[in-house]
Length: 376
Image (cartoon, rainbow, N blue to C red; front, side, top):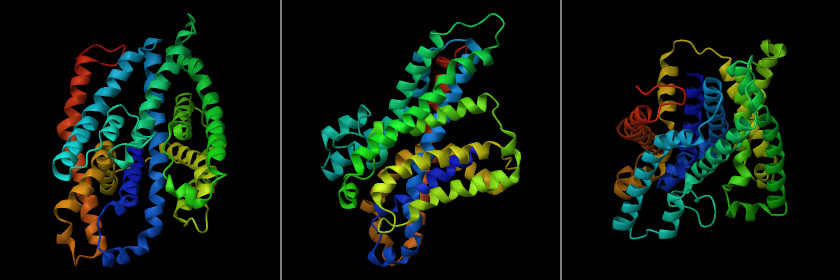
């Protein structure tokens, strides 16, 4: 549940951040002005997703190595494909059809970039926010290759447990994560520090994989630490955990500060590194937290479990709402307009999960069960 709550926080932040995709009246926008800091803060949802995805993928491969003392990268990528591709391609094809038949504005180059997960380079894709999915897809292939190479270069010792073997094999991932965090920071500094804020704003966000993949590897390193049972005694004290939580939350909240007071140069360079560390801290602290029985946690966790499909459908849905019923919101309070769109996105994502993702996962587990487990 803790990780589902992190997912829920991330997707809700993303929905709020993308409220400008809605055609809210000028009066409604003025009524929403008090939420402007929250709109800006919503950008931190993607770094949270990145670190969490790295943590989950690292955990999957660590568990497989523990069970089988080997890795089957093809099976791993096929299993990821069953989760990622059916909802993704259905959304892209439906949105492309809408653009072609109702807008007459389908860009075939952007469509091709979406299909091949290259939408975070060049002219981009059809859906403005899908660049983050490309970064994650590139990570899946790269990390599967690296993990397989690490496993195959080591031999399992006769008296060594599967867990000890997995921990020994994946130990370099922690070092690689530190190297990539430094490398991506240097690349971002080289790219953005010479620019002014106006130039940076014209190319925002920062979608390229070589600028952002460090967060995913940081999550994989976090998985290794968690799997190893690393838990310094000092972190068991509330007087340490609470300041760490406040520091992480304050780091996330920095994005609410307007660029006139906190430059885009800082946000695109040093701040992205800070966000990675803050997200890793929050995930680590959440794993040590027991949420207990609470209806609110249950509702938010359900949103978190459906976050992938919510992320996929929310921008096309916002644009469809703009096209079909935006004029019906005239006279509505801006917050009511936005809240209806947010709720519609959550419900549409849940429907997509139930109708497309869940059946696909059932087929995956029937045809391609995890390595070392028998078919059901």
